[in-house]
Amino acid sequence: MKKFIISGLIFSFSLAFAVCPLAAQGGHESTNHETESEKFNASEFIIEHITDSHEWHILTKANGESVAIHLPIILYSKEKGLDIFSSKQLAHGRIHDGYMLVEEGDLSGKIVFVNESGEINEEKLPLDLSITKTVVGMLFAAIVGAILFISLARSYKKTGVSAPKGIQGILEPVVLFIRDDIARPNIGEDKYERYMPYLLSVFFFILINNLFGLIPAPPPFGANVTGNIALTGVLALCTFVITQFSGNKAYWRHTFATPGVPFWLLPIMIPVELIGLITKPFALMIRLFANITAGHIIVLSLICLIFIMESFAIVPVSVLFVIFMDCVELLVAFLQAYIFTLLSSLFIGLAMPEEHH
Amino acid sequence: MIFLSNSLISPGVGTIFWSTAIFLLFFFILAKFAWKPILNMIKQREETIKNSLDAAAQAREEVVKLKGDNEEILRKAKEEREIMLKEARDIRDKMMAEARDKASIEAEKLISKAKNDIELEKTKALSEIKDQVATLSVAIASKLIGEQLSKGAEQQKLIDKYLKDINVN
Image (cartoon, rainbow over all chains, first blue to last red; front, side, top):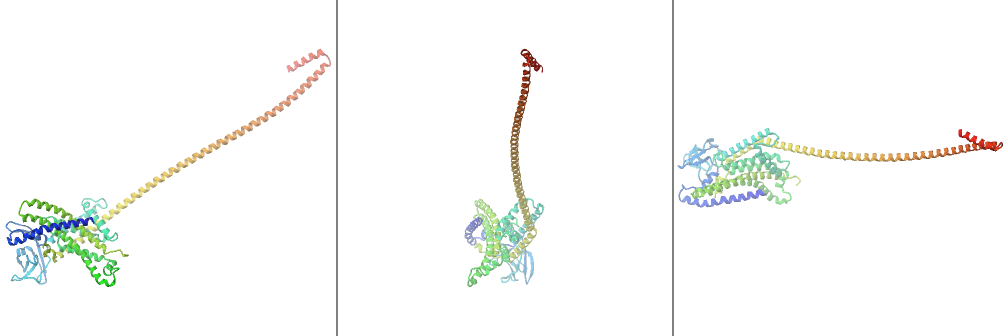
């Protein structure tokens, strides 16, 4: 309960912080357009950093040339089949092989078909399975996590049942925490073991991605992976699927024929219950996405202050605030991984109520 | 308006695809090669610790029990010793009392017997003395009677002579 309060405080605090610079920055944006397009646009800068992208932007030189890692683009469409090429071909609005990367408007960031005369086909988009920034960050975190835990498992083979050693000393308390304080009380003493692999995977996947997202550079780090709604949606969907598959008779009876509810109320109650089923994973998805994205936005906004103010005087203030926010974000990284795992186990546990109720 | 930015909240198909693929791969690989051995080992270790602790507690209980048993045995032995000593003392006292009684009875018996013997001897001696005195008296009387019949002077001489004889005898 205490943890919820803390997270609530942090979340509201983060939101407050997120809104202030943005509000201040909104005014600037309008003036920016009126005066010079060369002037620093914080909104664009932040959005560029927190959204997914086909290239990994590192820096822009003084002469306007940008240094970036060009990630592979994988496209599929019925007409043209599978196409794989470097995102360099599409940089700066170039057209390659009838494809174009839209940079502005509703389709911003999407790859579209372009005909010979340069007209964009807005109706039909190719299936974009590109290895984007988010995918690279995610893959890197997954590989690091896999190596870490497989080596941990190996070390257990060596130490056997004796006292934990080395890396075990750091990771074992976390594993035990998930088992004894998350899975056991929420799922139940006799059923929790089946769900441990999923809960551990989801916890460490989120945690590693959160932490790697906080590290600003070099490229495999710093991607806003857990602040990507597609990833949080997939994780929430996994929890949803597992929850529904572990639902017992009592759970389904409660959903479709809630005990104690008059028969004529069921047509109203069933949709309500179904909405209830969906809101749970939806909340999981939004919570993680919003928290992590908000954190990135705050940190970036604080850095943007320097460029908006165009003054060295603001540098220490900005740096101090960024350091402070990074500490908070470090806490949030653990907290969000914990909350996601806790709520997942809670939902799974709720799907298996005691039969005699 | 930043939160309504299209690219931020609309999930891309590719990202969904790769997220699913990467996460499921991560999950299945770790479930097989990491979580299973790790959780098993932790469980095994916990069981080992639990068993060891149980064994230790049992051993401690046994020690306590043994100690109690020992004390009990010691206490019983002491009690028994006390009883035995008391019995021995009683027997001794009894024996001494008995011996004392017996001795006094014996002594009394002896004394009464001696008294009887003395009495007997005394009467015997008295009767013997009586006999002797009677005989002597008769003898003396007969002698006296015999001399008197002859002469007075001679009689005196005779008495002296007999007395001498008695003395010599």
